Length: 124
Image 1: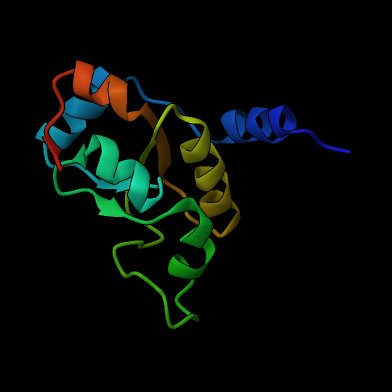
Image 2: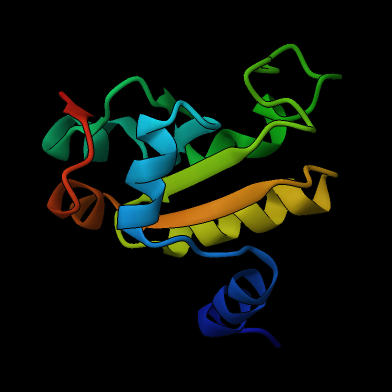
């Protein structure tokens, strides 16, 4: 039987992690699609990356599958996707799901607090 730490270890082994500073540099260079995978109440409390797409982890399978009516076309299989959450765990798990669905370029950029501390652009 798997525990939460087992799922996280597996996800972290599959989804590369980028430092907040490097992620901010990618953002400033206009590279990739930034996605906040937290739920709307968490984003409402802290804000998010300016211009980030908001796709809650609980909806990622539906929004990443072109065969569903909920498909979000910002999620392209060949896009560079940068995922953020509160601390990095949800982003890792969502990233593993995307990898399992055939998305090749998925990166975990960790937690929103680190993004802010690194001087990343934010919005309410």
